[in-house]
Amino acid sequence: MDSESIIQKAIGALASVEVACFYRAGLSSKTKKLLKALGDRLLPSLSSEVPYLQFADCWPFYFLAEIGVWSPKYKPDVLTRLLEIWKNSPLPDVQKAASMAISELPLIDRGLNPLPEPDSDSINFIKNQFLLDERYREPASLVIGFYWKKPWPDEELAKKIEDVETGMPGWHRNKEFILKALKSGKESAERKAHGAK
Picture 1 (tube, rainbow, N blue to C red):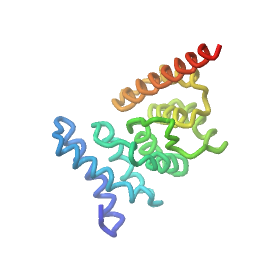
Picture 2 (picture 1 turned 90 degrees about the vertical axis):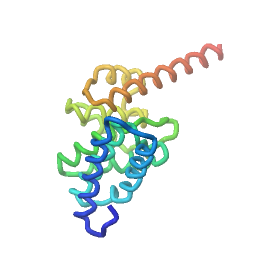
Picture 3 (picture 1 turned 180 degrees about the vertical axis):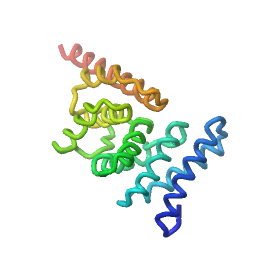
Picture 4 (picture 1 turned 120 degrees about the horizontal axis):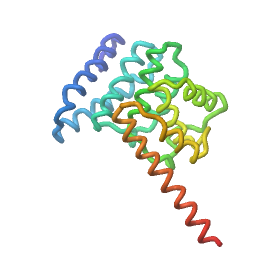
């Protein structure tokens, strides 16, 4: 991953997928720490504009998130970059890898505004991706919609989330997190409204 060669960087990223898959069965605290560091080391090359390196760098985030060892909590810029790759890549395989990583990464508090404010093109992109009704596009669209609080109001977002099943373990975890956060936010707003009367 530290090589000057882009091909070697891609090989390193894809090898980290194998490492993450190998350790799925049992993770010691030492192994978790090493795998988290592996995710951190992938971040710099995620900024590459080379399609095969983008593809190679997105997949480890999916698998590291799936086994629960890497989160965007301390490096939220990864979400912005994955969204840029998903939105701007002309290659379906790269788009798929980026959107699956978005779907699988553990969610962080949306009050932290981990993504920049969307423009109308970005909002339309998310709406259109959801409408494509594909297993990996729908959940990624909903995750981005959760962070942006757009293009769907919270009640509509909750309904859409309840209807999406993928079989991806990270999406199941994220689905529960979003529904709980939306319910909590609604209850908090209701308490404030009743308290103000």
